[in-house]
Length: 201
Image (tube, rainbow, N blue to C red; front, side):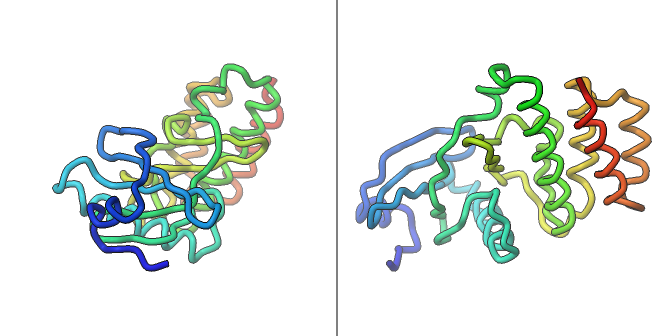
């Protein structure tokens, strides 16, 4: 399927349904050949470069085989299309999770942050990762890379360590210690943090 470059033309052809309205963008959905897709477009023309950057990040992550982010299908001038992700917002369900299940998703978030760090994608949201995370069964998906940056290495996990202080996994001294050594030995810091996440009661 060939999609038009401009969202206004896409909207005329496919008549998508408005799904959600955010501070910067609008999310629409539509179905094609029995499969559901999401469409993201900015609220204002001045935000188009931000959304083009997000599409480039998703395209890069898809080329690297990363499956826990939206899978880009098409990027036009002022919108992009990705496969719709079924799931519940982490923020909505985290209080319903057992402590064991909560720690399970904390570990998955740590690994996701580490993988993005290795690929040089800074999401710039890991100090409050619950805001743009979807959960489906045992799977976790990171969405909304509007604030993301390419070629910024080793920044997600240090941010995430701040969140682990907030939820009582690390104390401030432990987080500072791990954060200082992360660039020098990221794999070791991730291993030590995972141990804390397994041992936290």
